[in-house]
Image (cartoon, rainbow, N blue to C red; front, top):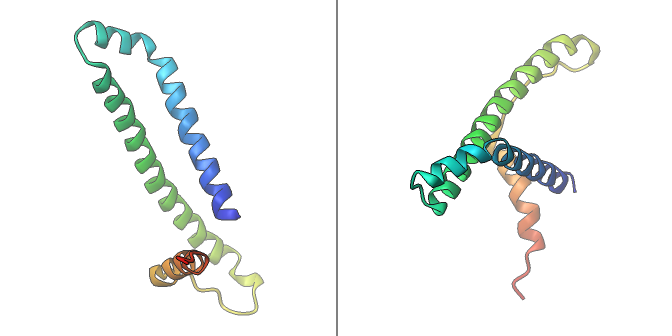
Length: 108
């Protein structure tokens, strides 16, 4: 449920960004179209910019999140009985992401 909510919120943010970008640059798109740019080229331009912003946003978000996690572990470390260790295990992350979905899928 949390993953679905996160995906839904991310999709809404991207849609709002693309819509805002199109509304803000409407005059530019009309000018480009008048200068000879095809409609499908304009669509590709908008989608490429949205994809670039999405990818860069994810990268920056992961860097900021990792930095904040590192700081929180060190700042709040004295409150815990056990020594907190920040680890990133891609194998475990993939396993807990994919295995439950595979168990739900039933080909019969």
